[in-house]
Picture 1: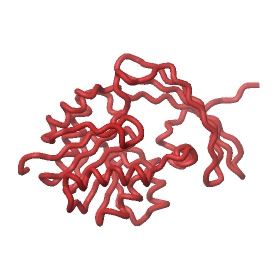
Picture 2 (picture 1 turned 45 degrees about the horizontal axis):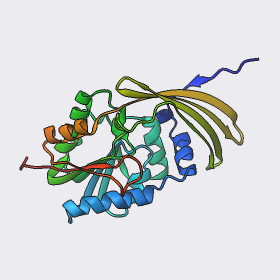
Picture 3 (picture 1 turned 180 degrees about the vertical axis):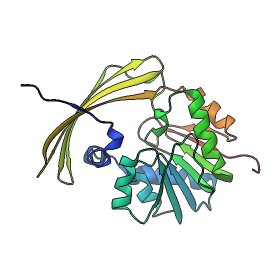
Picture 4 (picture 1 turned 135 degrees about the vertical axis):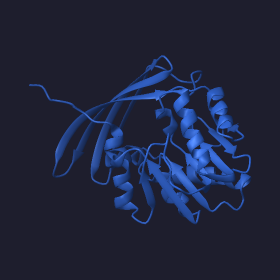
Length: 247
């Protein structure tokens, strides 16, 4: 007897995404504090922030405790549904980071949890960072958490976890390989919940392995200075830039 496996993008099931990362102990609060510290070093009076690729609002929730005005934007309605249900006081928008227009400017724009890795090419990265810069005040701060670089990516990685949160238990196994300038991860999820039973789905997730130089060049083309900070932020560090000029 065989069991049919659904094909579902993990970004379409925000509640399950939340279970996995909150259950694994992702420290959104401390990450937000580190990013805020870097923003304030460059713009001490920063009071407004846009989270580009905000996901289910893990960082946005904590930014709202520090900045007087915060907004989020994400492509996936599956992620935004979680924010709208759990954090209805926050302003979030459905949109593509490559070409959105909110009609407003902010003191800071951030893109965390390697959301920019979902961009398919250096041209798409250029488009996203230029769009972010258009939403900054002159002197505003752009912070980007990158996905792995080609020279520090580990191919053939096997990941595994079992987590429980909000009455969901999720088992996840993944295998990640290199495919040219991208990483390609196949993941399988088994989800158990009281009242609904067990569900099994799979997801193939492709992320771009942009080089450090590619990120830095994209910042400069977007009209921002750029520096790379490693060591005080878990993962692959942060790129931090300041919008130059008066436009």
